[in-house]
Image 1 (cartoon, rainbow, N blue to C red):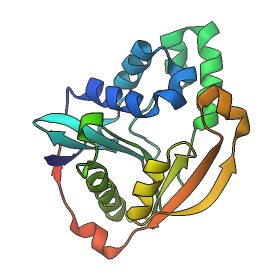
Image 2 (image 1 turned 60 degrees about the vertical axis):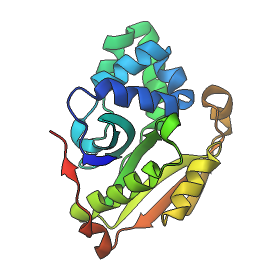
Image 3 (image 1 turned 45 degrees about the vertical axis):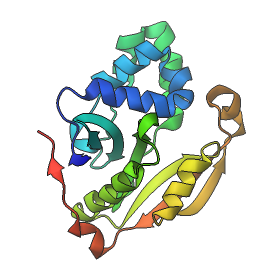
Length: 204
């Protein structure tokens, strides 16, 4: 297995596939149907805001983060309207606005982690989380922040094993029927000097 900073050129569709597999339930109302959603995600990948784990040369896991105003998956209101049309696009823009998150100064905001179903349990998620912390250290951030939904206890357990602690929970019962979750917990992990020791290859 090989860990890289940056999404290798030509891997955008694979990253979009993994993201949709992990977050399709949450994003479905805003970006579905699946084929169109994956195409939209692939077209708006910011390669320098992602970390990937390669197994046999193929992306088996990806972690995205927001830093300096850019996240792994981009695409603004104009892009959504262009892809879906004005009539169908406007409600989608509103839904995406509900999920929009911005990082605070000194904070690296994690933008999702996804691992291929056939590779789960092999430690890929943990490796990606450690590298996210190293990126945060290199950017002189004080902590890493992420949000986890209430229907994903496995992800929350992974984050807790890697030093993340819950700082607040927002109840969102109005989103349960639409997006499948009813609460979002924000978690933080402090960045330490030891985090800057890790270095991996930059993707070409």
